[in-house]
Amino acid sequence: MRDLNNWAPCMLDRHASPDTPRLLIVEDEANIRDLVCLHLESEGYRCLGTANGREALDLLRSQPFDVVVLDVMLPGLNGLELCRNVRAGQANRDVLILMLTARSDESDKLAGFDSGADDYLTKPFSMLELSARVGALTRRHRTALPKPMEQTTVIEEHGLRLDPAKRSLRLHGREVPVTPHEFRLFYQLVAHRGVVFSRERLLAEVWHGEVFVTGRSVDTLVHRLRCKIERDPAQPTLILTVWGEGYKFAED
Ligand code: CA
Image (cartoon, rainbow, N blue to C red; front, side, top):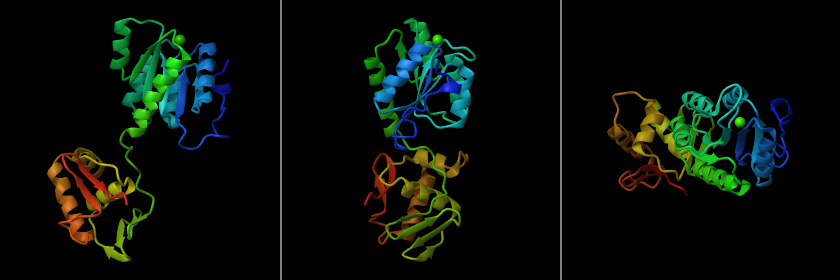
């Protein structure tokens, strides 16, 4: 039986690139778990299998995953409880969860979605259908907004140099004085250039839920940054406005 003590690293470190989606397969029926792991690995995913809900929760608290294929009936902690725990925790709280159940009962399905599952598959299912669902989920994950990024890496871009450790912004070698909020906002945009950030998202990233700020505060901050770094702040070429959506840093 493939369990935590005997989980198959399979393609885990030998062939997979860091971009290969990481899947956690939580299923106590060994034959189903093995079949699912083998099939999804043959499709290029990295899979880790476990039979126990508690072990799955420990794994989800200790390493990143893109998708969890989660059986509802499990020893230790059932799939619904596991799902609720992951959503309420810190690590992997946004992981995509595909729930498996033996019943096609509508109330089971609702309980699954209620507990935070993203999709649902009724046993017995075909490997083809499973692949299609997992594929749809991973595509969704990849197009979702990036997770808040730890601001630790020095970024050099368009004559700019952002050093988060020193909270320092240089433009063509010249130090540009910025406030901590200006730095955080600018770093977020530059680190994800081309990605459009809504005002709400920037509020969350920059102010971490402080209550006395609004979307207007974001506009003010962007205006101040443009005055500091753009050649012509009225015709910005670095921090671009995406009408009706938010802001992004120029892609090239
Ligand atoms: Ca089961």
